[in-house]
Image (cartoon, rainbow, N blue to C red):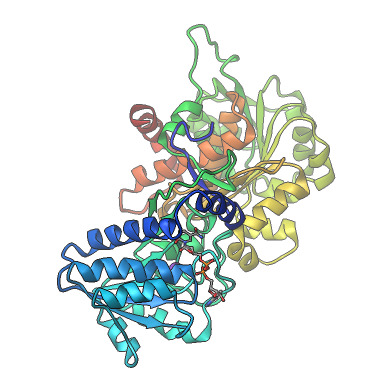
Length: 482
Ligand SMILES: NC(=O)C1=CN([C@@H]2O[C@H](COP(=O)(O)OP(=O)(O)OC[C@H]3O[C@@H](n4cnc5c(N)ncnc54)[C@H](O)[C@@H]3O)[C@@H](O)[C@H]2O)[C@@H](O)CC1
Ligand SMILES: [K+]
């Protein structure tokens, strides 16, 4: 699909460095840094509103990230801002950038740096960029803390302390209101926890030529619109796909109702329900085809959803996994699905764990997964030979065969409500039944689900059934404006 639909792509450090080398070889020395600094200064000016008289403090590390900050500071000083620089490694600050700042009337702060930072209208974080390793070093930590009290913080390329390739934050990091990033988004700006530190992100084009496949990509409205299933004139319900839902238990009948609620809004022509909660499902959704036999004998389906609220019924999971159609496994199903059976399936499998479930499957802790979401989702996909959707504030979807990981950012904290995951399972399973590949079904499902959560919540708490009902508004919004 490439860039044609405006997909937001993020490339890792190695790829960026290679593209930079290639471009630098064709440009006069320093030209790239001037492009970066010009874009950075413009973004700072927009944020400040009035540049003349503004108090700007630059936090300057020892690399080119600091160079960008210094040159941008020089531009702001020429427009009348009072610009001072804190050099974290005096003697190793970018010489050309420092000379430019001083020539423009900027100063180097020798003392009271933290106080000055606190009182700044704008702090520019040029401590470290894509050359950074690990969290902030000791000397930078108090400055990063002081910056939180300043009126605004702009991070240069990425917030210092955030890992560009993974979004991991090991130790302290700068919290930015705006990140001005160069050439391409970096994975760490799209994936939590890094994304939270970045604030809003503005991309400055510096002319980098990047390869076709990014490390991380985020679908936008138009991408989703192009992927949504559209029934043809002569579609009947079977051609539109039947999604089977094997979910719920006597103890948790609600999970079945919610998974069906999601499945009904996902584009499949019909929903077939299998399990002990048929009565509850029919009472709410009379259009459901309810079967009182197990999945193996339930009749034709084009994709299965198994697991939400299912309890300990291993037999159901076994029968679903034996079907030669795409299968989505969630919740209890994740515990009951043997890894080698999933690996050996010839039809696609989509696993949809939250961080706690992913941690159990990986034999690690929930915090470890939350701290390193990108590597966790890739590792799980490799272990199971399956597509994996890792739920969270930024949901990630990794394909079975590697490749770009999809990140979804439409979610809202209001979605962290009981049963919300059941709705997502039904929705994504329904999209698979309607013909989407597992990676697309997972990422389109997450996108619509997140958007539905926003529409349903509109700033107030919501229940999972509200989210299911709002899926159609999300769908319409995507179709109309995509
Ligand atoms: N290479 C290029 O063509 C361009 C690079 N640009 C800028 O250059 C940056 C990359 O510059 P560099 O390669 O010099 O690397 P950085 O400036 O990101 O950082 C490298 C320096 O920081 C130190 N460092 C590493 N980890 C640290 C930590 N945790 N705490 C404190 N210091 C740490 C290293 O010892 C090294 O001196 C980009 O992020 C971007 O801002 C832009 O000017 C655009 C063009
Ligand atoms: K930075």
